[in-house]
Amino acid sequence: MVRIILSGCNGYMGRTVTEIVAADENAEIVAGIDLADNGDKKYPVFTNIEDCDIAADVVIDFSSPKALDGLLAYCTKNHVAAIFCTTGYSEEQLAQIRAAAGETAVMKSANMSLGINMLLKLIKDAAKLLAPAGFDMEIVEKHHNLKVDAPSGTALALADSLNEALDQQYEYTYDRTKERRRRDKYEIGISAVRGGNIVGEHEVIFAGLDEVIEFKHTAYSKSVFAKGAVQAAKYMAGKPAGFYDMGDVVCG
Image (cartoon, rainbow, N blue to C red; front, side):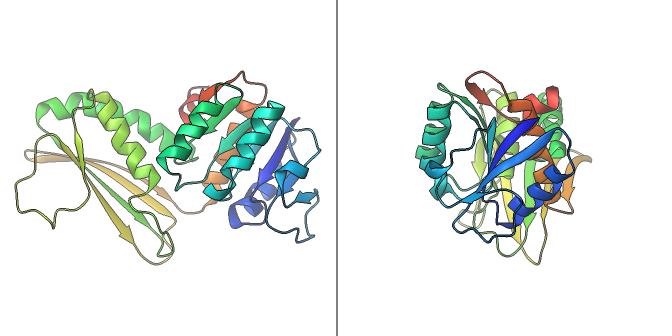
């Protein structure tokens, strides 16, 4: 049985993770962390992780970048695996997460969906074949009108996956309105759309002469991210110190 501490347990994603784990005989949420204890959970909720005295194997975080320092301190001190599902971290915070991997098992993923992480693998192979053949690469991401960061962390992860496959030769272009010039051969365009209640849609376009190849992933519910996080928790329990991502879960 994998014992989970759920940070951000009262939020939408926290509630979804709670429902998924309740139906999983191999996992259990032993404690929650949130700004307030709303009293409707079947596990104790702490407003500060430092006050949590319940043993666990892994922490799943669906809260806020503001909670990072406390979570890292707790996980490194107690050698508990940590899965950071939150987006919007600064470069300094990402460096902190990487550094913590020297003391405990840490996973950080821009998107917890198993489908997206399979897509990250597929587009690498496509880029190696198509980019040298002259195909241009563009990424279009769509999200709901409440999302504040753009482009999405997943769009950037997709771009990084393409660039990694091509020896980091490409630059990212986020806005074509500021310059009047032809598209550069070594650029990856990233466009963001915000509207309605779109959960998440990411499209990777390879545009060549007389043919276009498109890879697309659509999330119809945020439960796909919660399911991925729970699967990651079961994978991470008992793992040695190090930095992991959802690609490790996909590859098994």
